[in-house]
Amino acid sequence: MKTSGSGAIHKPKQAISNIRGTPAAYDTVSTFENGGYQTYIVTHCIECGEETRVHWNTGGADPRFVDKKMRGLGWHYDAFKPKACVCPTCVTGKKTFQRVDPSTVEVTDSPDGIEIVFTLPSEETMAKTANSFVPTTMPSTSTAVLAAAQAQSDADDTVGRTTLTANEKARMRRLLDIHFDDQLGRYIDNYDDERVAKETNIPRKYVTEYRELAYGPLKADPAVEAVKAEVAALRKELSNLNDIVEDARAQFVRLNGRVVNVEAKAKKLP
Image (cartoon, rainbow, N blue to C red; front, top):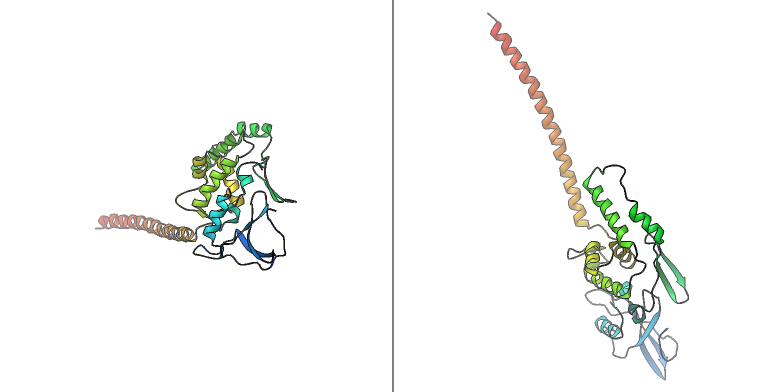
C-alpha cells in the first residue's frame, strides 16, 4: 500500500459523475490526521493488484483531474475503466507474468492482490502444432479455408513467443481504450482484433486473449442481429415463393401437353 500518515477512514465519498457516467476506477476516502480530515484517492493496479492512495486536497475529485494526476505519476490510467489502470511499476515492465498456455488464463489470489498469469505450450508442443496442420479432406466452404488459414497463422505467430513486453501491452491497451467499447462489448471505428494485432505487431491470439480478459468478450450488436433476422425471414419467404412458382411451372407444362394432345385429336375428327 502506498500512503502516508495514519488514521481511521472517516467516510467514503462517491466519485463525481459526468457525461461518461460514474468513474469506477477509484474511490475517495477521508481519514482524520493531525487534527483534521484528509482526503485520498484510492485506486488499484489491474496487473499486480496493488492499492495506491494519493493525497487529494483540491476539492471534488473530478475524473479529468484524477486522470491527469495519475498519468503524471506514471500510471496508464482511465478513471472510467478499472481494467485499463496500470501502475508505473507494471508499465515499465518491472513486474511481468510468464505465459505458458495461450488457451488458458489463470487468475489466483496472492498476498499482493490478484495475480494474472498467461501461459504458452512448451516449444516441442508449439513446433508440433505449427508443423502438423495437414487437412485430411478438402474444406467444403471458403469459411473453412479461412478458419484453417487463421489457425495456422496463429500457430506460427506464437512460436518463439513466451511473453508480451510492457511496451507491447501499453500499445495494445491504448488502441483498445480508444476503439473498444467494453459496455457495448464491440469495437468501433472499423477496428477488430486483427487490426489491433497488425498495428501493434502483436500476434492476434494474444490480442484476443488480453481483450477478453481485460475488456470483456465480443457481444452481438442488437441492430445488426435484427437486420440479420429480417434478411433470414425474407430469404425464407423468397424460398417459399420460389417453390410455388416451380409448382405452377410444372402444372403449366402438364396442362400445355394435354392441350396439344386434345388439339391433335380434334384435327383427326371428320
